[in-house]
Length: 393
Image 1 (cartoon, rainbow, N blue to C red):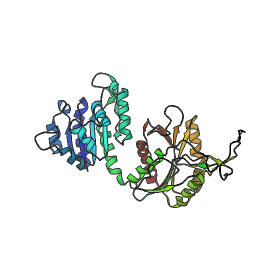
Image 2 (image 1 turned 180 degrees about the vertical axis):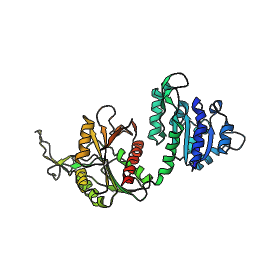
Image 3 (image 1 turned 135 degrees about the vertical axis):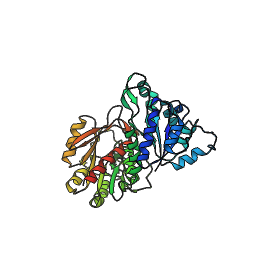
């Protein structure tokens, strides 16, 4: 396992040596890269002697590094930047490639992990927070800084995370590739569409992004994935089995057919609760009088799965605008779920169409409230939870 370790210029740079050693103890080969400012805090010689590899410090140093960033980008299984200053985060977010590390970043196709470290006000600044969101939306994993006493004498968040936490994030990424190998999972995504006539239908605002992220993460971890999706504007994934449906009844049929041989089901789809009692052939004509629609409930897929499940792990979603925990806990119990993902769909943080989500994981044993994260990160956290449940059975 090859880790390219980028080190930038701040007081936390001395911890890069500890991170390097911990990575080595866990079987990683470490290739250090330092910015010019990083060398003001820790010497390149230190990391060279610890790693056993020459430290790249400049895009055009003595040996031929004019293409070294490409070679190193291809060699690394993970690019880790610890510490990552506000400056390097800004460069990464906006594609600025004016030194070796930033050029390496835009050249790599490997997963990227950054561990920010800076003054509390620099961390809280809208520009930094916007850059973090941009990087998260591109799949970069952020090891959140810790709160405490900072080198500048202030107290607050911005202190580099402990080396053990940084290294564990990298190891989880490296070792997580096949942790679901041999498992069969179903994920539902997107809205369902309930046709009223040949022109009109009832649906909802779901974009499908959360369900697609969950499916992609399961496939990345080696699972045999079936993604059952209602109509979305998203491109169908190629690394898994994709089943296109339209209505709640079609989704129910697709799920029930595959459920007996499945290890886990994640019902991330926003299934319509009601459908028109009758479908009208052709188009209902407007005649300026009020139109009354008769609606009937759609199949309750989650409830049926809860009644039928044996050893399967069953995960639902609760999209609520009020009393989030109360309604989610009721749904968790009534439908015999193992875990429910609750999120508020009203207000400025509404997740519909967004690349970010703020959720609460609720189980019969407790809860975990997550900060606003990219949907890719939420998917990763969710599969960590599901894997633990699968392993316990």
